[in-house]
Image (cartoon, rainbow, N blue to C red; front, side):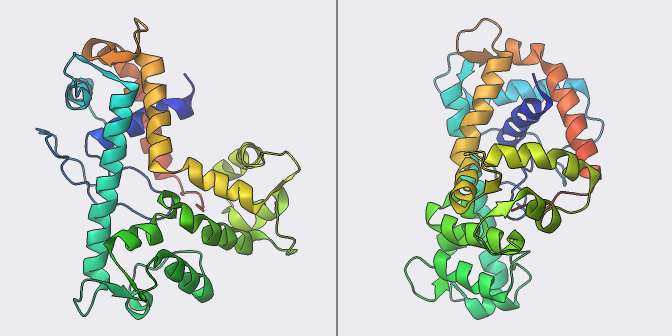
Length: 287
């Protein structure tokens, strides 16, 4: 099992267990309690604990199976993991949007004007004033001039809303496309998009090649949109669930039991430590 796959599995598990999950377009506040869950684990303030014991990890893994096993057959399938994780992500987005609305809505009319957004501390990073305004207008689906709670989700999590893909792809190209040919070369990507961090530079070429679907040496707008789609919570939830079942399903019945997930506790311990180590480094630039 590759480290990236291990980390995806752990992200799935901590999503289910009410711990922070990274978001490529902003930060997430503390996760809300999932409906119907009898969770007794209090999430740490910053996500993955330092030095979590194996005993606690085992308890959390068992709890994960219990709350995702909706048909109560003693094990959780890819579909069950996917459904729970996707619903948890959507609920996080709603709770986050409520918090953002509360912060930005200065006149308390239940919506956010561009003026309120522009004066807030919630503004999108790496976007100039014109890009901010354009993204706001695109998120405002009903053309009311204001953002509702659902439209705030589109504003800050455009990967969840296909109607946002064009404007965000254009932002990304404007950031890096130095020669204005509508494409992003690898050199432009390295110079304008990445921060000068050794870890980022090492990972840059494989990441670029992965997004360059036609292997023409450039990333175009459609390829950026495809990348955005891959970040959607539904897509990620499915991918993470498939990784978890593939690597923990010892009897190959297409599902994971408490016993099976506990048998692989070492995977989660190693990946948690790796994520903690990564968090201590300078974070890479995100789209």
